[in-house]
Image 1 (cartoon, rainbow, N blue to C red):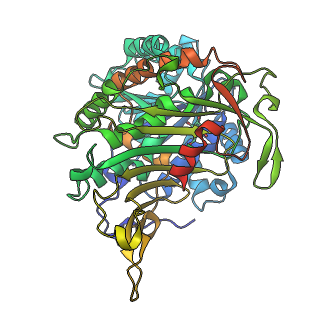
Image 2 (image 1 turned 180 degrees about the vertical axis):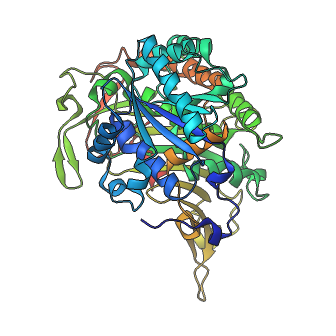
Length: 506
Ligand code: BG6
């Protein structure tokens, strides 16, 4: 893999590790999958692109007794091929160390304190620490409490300390509050980084810039000109090896409570007065507060819920959700949901936001669609009939990172005929320097103490407040009875969602 040369690039939008605070990155759950598949590869890339602080020490922590060399050998076995083939892999591994920690044992945390102090002295990491909890969420409270007990959350005079946690942040409002209370016993809100990897996507971060750094869109960005908004995260994969987690979560907790509501907030928020983490998150919070509450089963606000049955994906037969390993034969966990959501404020009154996500859909496709209204009066009706397509702005996240604007134009020739064409911007045509993937951005933001693209607790709670009543009803769903429908793997969800999904995906 090529190593990017900052000196030659002259690019000003890049981060040079030499400008960052030196630090130690402590990964809990270091022998697990998340560390080997995502975090270590991300850190290696940052090292390769010279974006890691200098110095930076990486300490893996886990219950398995290992020494540094044993841990490196494990990574050598478990990290992806591409990572192990990287030209700087061996050099990078020298930065990586291991400290065995039984998560509930205060003495082990004292040993960690001693080890971290040694690194501060030998490597010059200046007492700055990130604790990345790549462990099951049930362990967050214990590890956070023990870190606090060992004095590792303290910042006074000893460098900074930050804790990184991933969704799910609880499984409902009450448990989210409980988790937050425990985290806050040791860490302040500024020290807590709640990851949503969608917020680290280039195309997602760009929504604010597209909307507020261009004069073109904002005057039209409201109920007067927008017919509806569609936000879809479709996946062709099934539940894979995560049935244990997914059976507890289902699609609403897995995708809506976090990723889809963040996308909605970015599309719907008002411009903040300045581009700062607190002001941006204030505006998102106002959106969450304006979500029209769910008003009961018969109100039309009940989501369409589905569960995949056997079918065909990419030409190959696949089993239904209930036949997946680890899933009960009578499971009523939804693997697809589509919601029609309204935002009760001046800008969006009456504009539906369609949110949809599901597994075992025909393809992986993630996008946001802003569908404008048609022209108010067609002066071409005598020659063309009434059928003029309205403009549409599509913000593609996957498979293409792109922005498409559809518009009408004349077909060249003697007669008046219209055709629908698109202006198309692809991010890949325009990249200066190394492209950072989500975990690289998350880690760099955290090293910089930049909270803009992390969840703040008020948002987490408001998202649960909105979804809890829906989840309560969903959890009472039974297949073929009220609510939960089946769909064949490889189709765009249950029939009742089909029309909307195909309009958005067309
Ligand atoms: C995760 C969910 O948060 O996001 C997964 O737990 C889902 O179920 C994944 O597959 C989708 O992320 P992406 O970036 O591939 O769209």
